[in-house]
Length: 316
Length: 167
Image 1 (tube, rainbow over the protein chains, first blue to last red):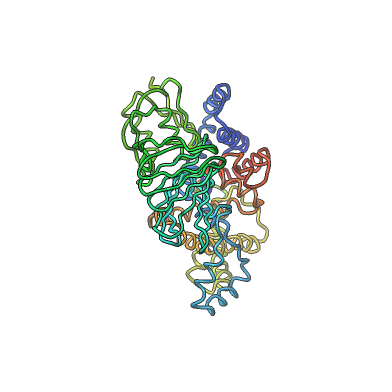
Image 2 (image 1 turned 120 degrees about the horizontal axis):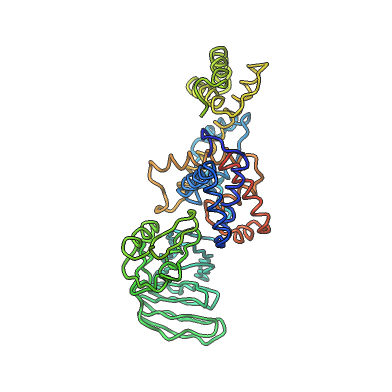
């Protein structure tokens, strides 16, 4: 990505790359940050090299990950075999489409279905049930005559079960949920599995505890031993399906933690502003816009060190 | 960009005037298509103009052939990439498919990236993509590729020098 650009001295390139790799590793310590600022200001070339990296990263950021993997892993056809290959493909005429599709390289990921960070995905299951994956989620699916199983490996899903003879079973780290009918949101969190039932009926089986049946609308936390009592659904439950993050008197730190799920990298909240309260509906599809909105509506400023490292601080 | 009257541009101008017709013929024989041949001949000279160093040339036609082979190779590679790209687009969930205008821009980004990363070992490329396109953390990349975090960082360093600075 440096085709016609002005060349940088090699040592400047090396230093800039060094900083980039450090920053993406972990937030810089205050001492490192000072050193970085110093480096940036020491020479015009430094700043230009840094800006150049940022502009390339901006271009890379516009590429959806599955597209990049599938395209760049395309098999390399040696030039001298090309002519022959083209003829063969022509000869196969109608069959060509099928052949090409079979050769398509899938991204090197192990889960059956995976949604990248910042993206949602809908999967239609064999029996008319529907599965939606929120940002950064992964599931394995087993659907056949004997079983209808969704194994949540990571993240958050919304399951809408078709009324069928067999319930859809959702397996998580903490246990199993059998959904006979209705709509269920399941999210893997640090201390368990968060369930939100919007309609219908489900049977919840903790990994090492007694089963319980739930009905109607409500949410609860499942851990390996038990299901907590059902409480009323909160405003943000399932809002992601419509691409929204709904806050009602939410601490800014919690809000940013939630928003951070929809973007790459580190979104930091300074302690000084962590307890500010925020309310409203925000589109998670454009987190940059949400951050801009915060700057306009709250006494905060957003500092962008790199695309992957953003900090929300008190406005000076 | 090299200035208009730099030694490089004078050199390339000389090559162009003396050998442009010959190069066109050479490419046409390989491609079988006069339009692509003209495009690629143009690409060959543009590539020379933007090169950092053009060596002293004893055998201009041998030299031009070497550069043209590279251009030809890229031309074929681009076709491979385009095909893979179109297939990938087809398989992408609807909400992820970029609009018409962005499609071309993204393809161009990928073509350039492919050319820059060309020749690097596969784990180096993969590490770079996982870091800059998927946005994974270094431990996540290490786990996915079965490498240590230190190796991942070394790979990223190598790929970044190429990708950002063509070094």
